[in-house]
Length: 266
Length: 265
Image (spheres, chains in turn yellow, green):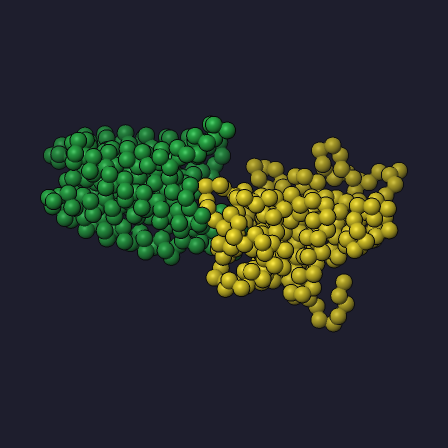
């Protein structure tokens, strides 16, 4: 983490955020602060409330005012989890990008180049493959020069090497442009080494911490090239409590062997 | 040419041009049944307008907007799906309208004309209404084009990017209500949506951008109006249905090559 004197600017915050739908709590009492230049990765099981948290933060869910804070006028680049292109709409990638605002054409080209999708400019949106669509969606999020980038499973439909590229691209752009990043990752094991902190969400925040480097792990060295493997780390999941079969919190069993290294327990 | 034919032609072309971009949105957003429901409700507007002794156009718009608002509210609950709600609304509004008309004793209303249109009976005043209303719809639509497209592709993304989704959607419904009010005289309550949907569906094959689809759809709609009127004058067929059948013929012709090549494969 950056230890310079000036504290990074707070962009958005959730305090004691609880979202319930039909009597069922989707997220419970979640605390989260996002700062400029910081990458936070959200992991957790399916149905753990990751997308709900993201939507609450973006103001897409009705929330009490004291639960959500966003800097007024905050420019957010958003990459939604589900984006189905209806085949009934004829629209090119270039036109699709231009929907997010009146931007000069060179800026659209530059953004497409930045995500490695410059060849797709004149393609029809519904003809794109899953990986191509993800790049185009990232381009649309970046086009607005966001202060906060919110990516809900950006790596879906992208193959493993493509995922490594995508994550390193996001890190590089963060270094260049200094935006804050909140990213949802479906995968418990692949978490970017450059993430400043990882939040594990299972309705409530289970734990937060720094991802541990696994650059020496033989499994990762086999899967990725050396450069790519440096970008990844295994996140040690540290529980200060346990879950029963209903997912409710129960005290930690004494005999269970868990590693508490490199994780701040909340 | 007779005056009434020129009036019919101009009004028909105006409606075809205005219906094209809205029809495209209805195709993209799967709103054709929604449009149908609003059109059915407009009969209730007509009869309420007649009963209250006011001009029917504002009455139609008021009823269509109320129905649209009610639908938006009711769609928030999830026990009944949208198409069920639309089915309930469309037919109860139509029936209510028919019953309300029966109470209007002193007034003689041409029910067939309301249901299927009476384009050859367009008056000078109707023509002004059509052109004025149509022009207004097109003007508003140019301002809303980009936010509307953005919402159509992904509502949440549009909202995060600062589009006032609720208001833009409301405006779209208002525009559809306006077009229905204006087109009522030309093709009638039961056929209005076809004039919006069929040309747009035919245009999809040739278009590579949303604007192209709207423009091609306007051209196809205009051809349908001309063809339908010609058929009506030549063979003395009812004008509204002839326009719709012409549109359907064009649709069939545009899809024939694909259909054939797909079945031969």
